[in-house]
Image (cartoon, rainbow, N blue to C red; front, side, top):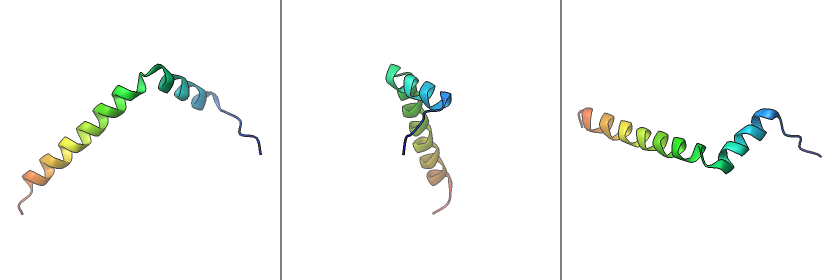
Length: 45
């Protein structure tokens, strides 16, 4: 079964190889962590 790559997948993989997607993922995960901590601290125990 041959897997054909759509243009979206190819461009996504190209961006991943160029490293432009890594900082975005890192900042997004950091934002999610800070958001979760903020909600956890803001909510009454």
